[in-house]
Structures are given as C-alpha cells and as structure tokens.
Image 1 (cartoon, rainbow, N blue to C red):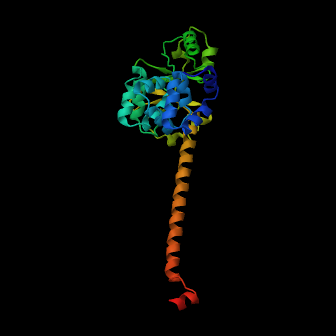
Image 2 (image 1 turned 135 degrees about the vertical axis):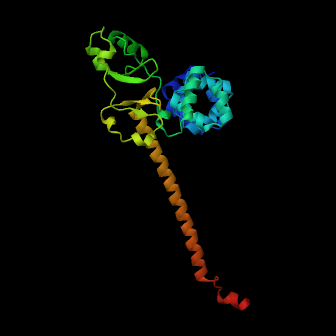
Image 3 (image 1 turned 90 degrees about the vertical axis):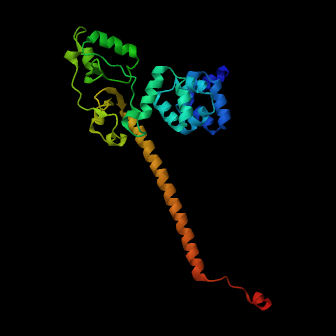
Length: 279
C-alpha cells in the first residue's frame, strides 16, 4: 500500500507520475500500479501512452487489470486494449462489469481511426415526453453541467429525434414538454466515417460537440471538438516522425551509394615509394 504523501502526489500530479512510470522496468511499473488504489491507478493510466500503459497492465493479473480499467475513461481503455494481444485483452474484459465490458467491446469493433472509436457514449438523453423541469433536474444530477450545452432527444429505440439547448430549458416553463422545445438536428455524424473527414467540419465553428449515429440511425453518443483536434494533432505528429525517419533512411542509403561509387572511380589505395621498394 502507498503512504499518504505518495497518494497525494499521484492525485495532484498524475501526468508527471505517468511519465516516471513509463521509464521504469515493466515489472516495477506494474508493482506500482498494483499498490495504488484502483481509481487513482486509472487516473494515472489515462496520462500514459497506450503502448506504455499496455506494457504495465500486460504483466498484471487480469483481475487487477480489470479493476483498474473499470475506473478508466473509455477512450483510454480502448486504446490500451488495442495494444494487448487478443487473449489477454479478452481475459481482462471478462473481469469488468458487464455494462463497461459491453461498451468497450462495441468500441473495439470499430477500426482505429473511425468516429465511433472516439465517441463519448455516457451521455444523458431525454424523451420528447419529458417536461422541462424534469429535464433540468436530470441534467443537474448527471454531472455533465460543465461539459454539454445541448441534450439529445431520442425515442424508445434511441433514434435521434432532435436536440434541446440548455438555454431553451432555462427560458421555458417547467411543465412544457421537450416535444415543444426541442430543435431539429442540423449536423449528424456517422459512427463509421473516418475521423479525418470531420476535422474541418464547418459545424465546429459553432458547436463544441456533435451527435453520432450508427448506420441504422441509432444514437451512439457525442463527438467532442477537442477530442477531434487532439487526435488529429497526434496523427500529424506521428506522420511527421515517420516522414523524418524515412528521409533519414533515404539520406543514409544515398550516402552509402555514393561512397561505393566513389570507391570504384578512385581505384586501389596508393602506396608510398618506400613501401613500393620494399615490395
């Protein structure tokens, strides 16, 4: 178990702790994760690169890894599980609560760079029959007050019917139904569309998040603009690194080629006169 000072440091500086753990031997890092309270371990894990996080959890028992992932944000957990071999990932999924495991399995069905992988699905949805007063109470109780300014309105089959703006809820009588308040959805994203296709979507100039549906029209969650920008930046950085490595390799091969060509034209190395007389 960790002492109070160490726990306090980890809670206040999870990013720094993640960098330190990533530099340790995998067994030492895994032992550190095992000693942390599970919610705290999940918090630190979210700041690690997926490959480093997978190395750490890969040497932990599946039960312990499952306890940590049960507290880990969905995008970080998905990225980590993609880095593990299928057998170990499946063993960890079996240790998770059924609802969380189902959500992770759904995300893992998508390829790595489609919108569905990055959707936040833990979203409050409302029925068109909800009244404004009830909607406001549910919104406050959801803990999403600081993150979302619009709420999706869905039917019994979770088909997206419209959205209701928080400002409209606050300006309408409590007994009015959302059917009377909601607005049509202008911009809807497809869960199987590549993430790169929405980086420059014009709706980002006025919306911080957009609703996502699957091919059957079922609401999947919200895609946040900040998430799109973060993933696009990471993707571009990866491309820059790969391009630089390719250019470095090409330059090195070119140098070797011209050295070889130069050696052919220069002929055998010359000997001085003394060596020649001795020979």
